[in-house]
Length: 278
Length: 294
Image (tube, rainbow over all chains, first blue to last red; front, side, top):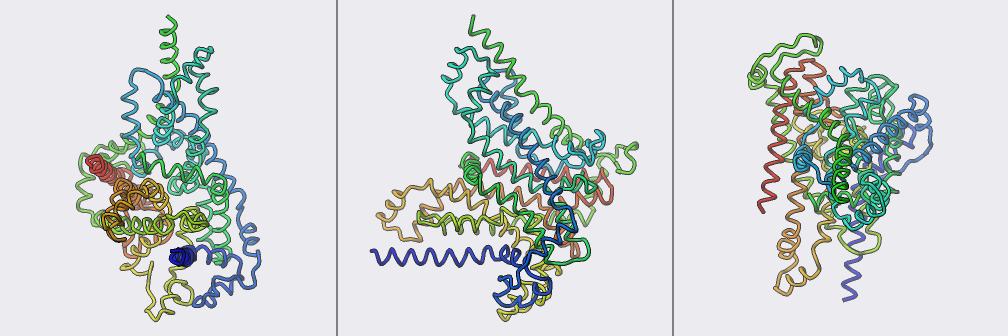
């Protein structure tokens, strides 16, 4: 039995290590190439040594920062994504709370609407949305990147599902203590709902950090350029040197990587929840 | 008395609470949706916003004659039909590989999930470089030559360009579905496997009768979200191929973008968008119905 167990362990670790290495090899190659001198990148592609950065240096990274304002583009993305998230957390959580705990006219209608609008593909409405931004004078402004994406049916639904489980006794106790419904929400409910806020935070972050099509339409200059647009532009701008390109890709992945290191638990929970509650 | 005062203040609070979300949804989801339908029946050109003429079903009639539109439909469906099973099976296989309570599982999980942490644009650029059709500058062709195979055109060849995008997309996306499967696998208890083995089920039989049947709902859900996501394909062809070569990777969303913003046929693009909208909504409603029926 123990022998079988040991064999099983060996198979598990060996198999997974091998598969994981193959799986992440493109990313290893990206990082390795970002550290190599340009001439070395496409040398010896046919041997495993292509994954090892010989003569490693950070000069490609220096070149990226010299040629484009990488900090600014990362800052732009962080700024608009974080503003979306903060507004999303506020606007959608109060709406979800009302749907979970308050009685009011039109409640069922609103809930049905929220659930059916969840499947609306944003790609199908971006043309009139663009026109709307133009009418509002919002093209190439933060508002066009932020305002249309604050209210989200998915977030409202997630918040509602979470708040449904909060015991009514707790809310009644707060009301007996003289808290109005608004105060109850902000002082009693919000502080004990950290998990759902963290989950929406990270799901939102991943979704909007990856925004590509919409910024491509509404952002025209360098001033508000997002990181995704920046690396895409950098990829096509001369001189085309692959070392700096790989460096720019690596840099742009760092903020999300950091976010994951800290909030991974909530992200995994969020994905799992959406799958099970579906 | 106290109760009814409470009810009134509760109702007031409710309207305050829903107001911002309702206003924003109305302005940036419902209004543009209705506008899509409206513009679809006009000859709106982005250069002449002051002159929008209603033109009935002209756009739709034109669409049915438009070969490029049908190619876009075909490409989108081709991508969806292939990427969904490929990515789902890959995700399930990865989840099964690491559904164990051993030490160090978190490292493997992180590895399989890592393409998700890098954005789609990053991955698309990286693979464009790796897919280079010369074995001297393309990592994958160097590998093929090493294995004694012919080098492949990948993104340069209309026959392989979409398949190359499919392969990369499945690699990038599988980690997400893997996480959902892992959660689903935790819902299957050890007793169910024991019961199956007492009934004389071997490894393969218990995989089919316990694992797969226990994951049925999760698999349906994963297929649903993957189908919808696949239908929206845009970033990969935009970054990697610009819809080429020979239109082989031009998708519906890409076509909407091209007609609306590059050729400035706003009305026509809205007609494509309206059809795209109908396809996506009916697919998701249809799949929801199937899931509910079980």
